[in-house]
Image (cartoon, rainbow over all chains, first blue to last red; front, side):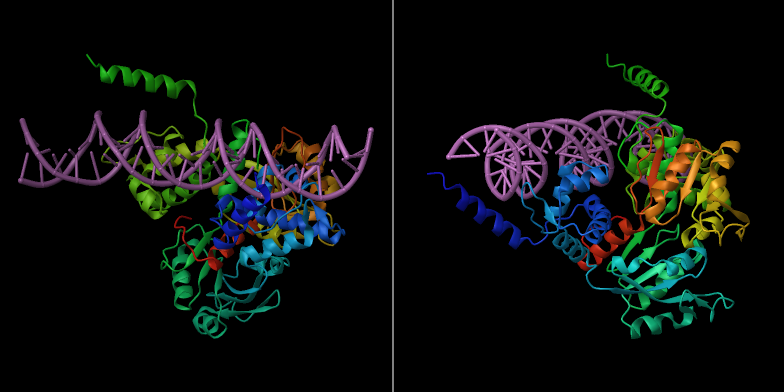
Length: 232
Length: 232
DNA sequence: ATTATATCGTTATAAAAATAACGATACAAA
DNA sequence: TTTGTATCGTTATTTTTATAACGATATAAT
């Protein structure tokens, strides 16, 4: 008389199929790479399954949060067992768009720019920095971590010709807006902004500001005012 | 019969004086450095006052948020005028503990470590990286951005002798925990963790994890699934 | 076969953060 | 002097995020 299986399943499948990925909370998206990192280690170690509980304990999170986060990638686990590591990795990568490599250019071959160029590991994040640009004539022409530094004047042509969609901005703050304008002209769709400058860009361009000072502020504040909070 | 001025003022002053800095929301603390950065520019340009409205518009925030954020530093503005730039800078710096320089050591003289060592600007964040350490004998002894790279074995002695309270961790992920243990033994109180490894440390040590992948995940996700959100 | 248990997925509640609303104040202009 | 307005600080509401609660399920143990 209750017909439990039927009524529940039909509702769930419809919901999941129709709205594809329900609104993905920002904090959730931020946690996904951390899961991914651990999952790759587990995969390399030969683990076939992993439980949300394990993922949670490593990252000092509540298991519920992990399960909810994973749910938005569309993955489905089995009770008492957990999730298939392979499937989980694939689901997260796909959700973040990291299953296909995105070509990016980097502007500003200074300290930080050089470090980012040298970072082996972006390939794990679906990112491929294919070229570097700088305004300084002394830097132009030199080779940095396998890429020849090109002059800024070449940026627009290069980016258009190679269908570049992502730009990494590592110039000094006072020329950041200028460089961003150049990227916009070049048809770039997203800017990863490592400068302290808040960029003004057309509405169809996505920017992500990366500010070291932010994290340092949290650290300093906790250090000075006794740490009461627990989480990250 | 209402006695509005009296009742309100007495309540406010008591509240403010007693609990010093009411619980500082995490998101608020993160925004403070951005204000600070802009304030210093305004100061250099000779501006004496700034309104919360201006701060807000530059950073694409609501004025209310700015006023609330500033309020927790203890600063008080004047209606129609705004805040004194000098006072505001001092208040934020003091709140974050950036009014006195904190000495730090850096462990891991790789790409990122080198870039951080070369970053002129930490002095604006109350941070002074006074020494660099590395495990690799080929790096030990070399000079990097004005600091001689020392062997890991010297870390504990050096940190204790110089009363170092903060450690910057830029080693590969698989040796991060090991380095963190060393820092703990050396009496370090806070660890700025640039590795992808979640650290296990004694409860009295504060850690702040800096994960580039986090920001990239947000950027990628927005790029792939149409950007509906507006804010940073 | 029954019971126990670890885990899942969902729903309900609590906490934190963002947004909105509103009175108060200081200067400017009529 | 009066009125207007930009801004402040606080309180109220909404939204987002985290935590808690709970039934469901798959294996292991009795």
